[in-house]
Length: 429
Ligand SMILES: Nc1ncnc2c1ncn2[C@@H]1O[C@H](COP(=O)(O)OP(=O)(O)OP(=O)(O)O)[C@@H](O)[C@H]1O
Ligand SMILES: [Mg+2]
Image 1: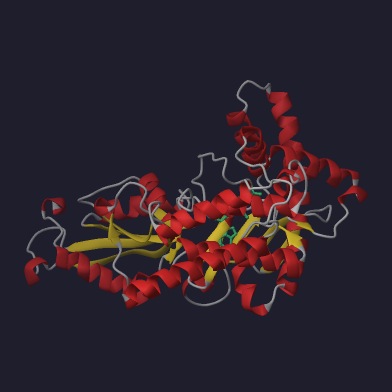
Image 2 (image 1 turned 120 degrees about the horizontal axis):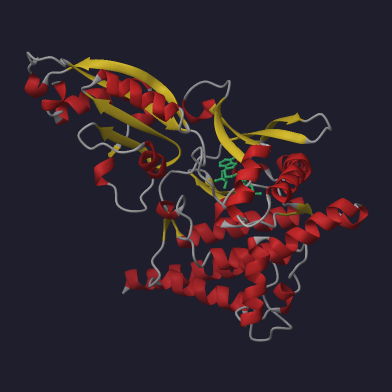
């Protein structure tokens, strides 16, 4: 019965005032589901019973850590829905409550005199039951001990369960017999993932210690590590570098990324080796890198450990970046001898090769897309494309002018100066 009385805008506004009073993160008006375009990702969503959506649709529309405000005149529906979301990768941050209905400023003399609402936050990266190739570990947000807002959450990165690894292998290789899948899954869950996670913790300690103070907030801080019975890392707790803030220009994105990589390589002495956009964040404090799971110290001698030698040998043949490098060297899209030298190797060139590729196609990651202003036709985009071309295919491939992140940064700064001059002379004309 109550559903027959449409929810008025002012009633929704009353709910939004209530939720914002509890949580200032919701002070920016949540976007109604129905107004979103394909590919849009937002930090706060509004879903009313008049425009119903599945938990999957909400999950897909929210950035990681974003919240949805659900509003309905039906109490049972609100309770049912909140339970469903709690089982689908969300945390209920404001449990089901009601406000009196007063559309047009008047109480209504019907059943359903109240509107029911609750708020839920997306905590998982991947919804339960879904499988992705983008991530390996079980990564989720967890409420920490600090008070208030996003500081209250920490990132938990843990070795996936045997069951999760098995499900992933099965979907990737459906033709493989169960016993082979199980054996491989065990190897990954019991050995390989814990080894890489342990390395990640060790590398983060170095990076957290040695990165100059002004860059430190642009990589995750290792807060805590839990080990398995063999002493390998099972779970890392990291501070959350939350994507968001005002969009930055493509040039700023390029400059900040190249600068962070330069410091990492030249001042800290660490190679990241998995600089896909999935492992970038754009926060109000700048561009950052996460996922140091494949990183190696510049002075590290992997050959001392047969196990690491073989793990990295395999990784440097199978990683997405290495596969891309192979493809691009074969097709002639990469000719620089400095970069070709990184093929199948643990080498700084792997990082700056992929950086050069990424700064030229900054919109290929859905989480970051709305945070980078990119117009392929713009002068800035064209100049960056020319720079990328010079890095990958220099005039003299045996003597490339660009052979480090520092060189790329210099190239970007030259573009900045050239653009500033053109703007200056246009303004003066
Ligand atoms: N500290 C952090 N702050 C913000 N976002 C993070 C943080 N750590 C991880 N993320 C997000 O979680 C995603 C997955 O984490 P991460 O990349 O560390 O693991 P993974 O992708 O499973 O590892 P791998 O790349 O080795 O497969 C990242 O792509 C990033 O979007
Ligand atoms: Mg990753």
